[in-house]
Image (cartoon, rainbow, N blue to C red):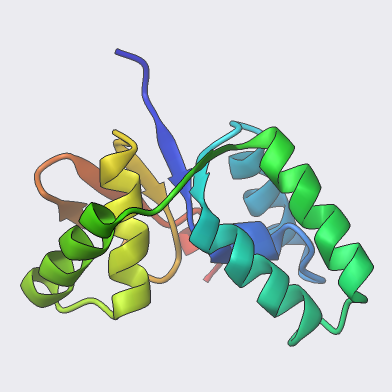
Length: 136
């Protein structure tokens, strides 16, 4: 079975970061063509327009590129139910638990994220890898 990787929104956002080291680490992850969810795309657009102050057309163009270069998974009622359970079990924010649930549903074994503890394992099969840990 081939390893499957999931990228959290922060990894996608850091591909545009002014910090060259963070940008390099994020681009390294994104070059693996990870799995992402519709949540990641929507959060990216929100951050790009809001915090990064990109024009909507630029944010949308980047989101379309993202959707072409990654495997995008949807979100179902079952995904949300799993996220609720994961949030309670692991004490995650709802948004983080949705990311974990989407990664588990997609059969991923690695979740690239800086929002959760590096090395943490969910459900004995999904390991968090913080690609920015050596930069801290």
